[in-house]
Image (cartoon, rainbow, N blue to C red; front, side, top):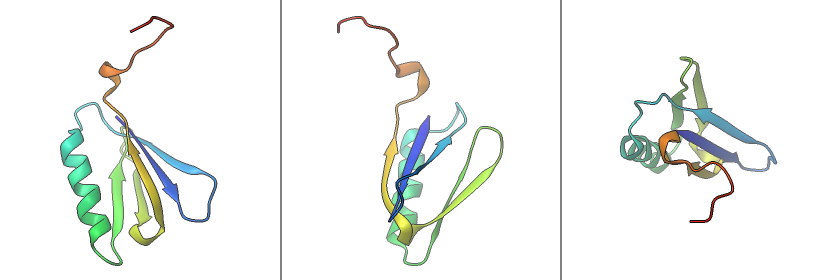
Length: 78
């Protein structure tokens, strides 16, 4: 699962690829809890074990992609 975080006053995004066993609902709940707390830092651990911290006050938006097994690849028509 990929999490993309947009940062206030920055054109770049932070892209964190979470482990395959990460539960989408748990990740979203953690993000919501962190952003609701003033002065909190959102900590995520990627699939290589690296920790990424983003101050909640600097988050412009967050995108949480579907797990990689749900992604479609190719040019087929749905």
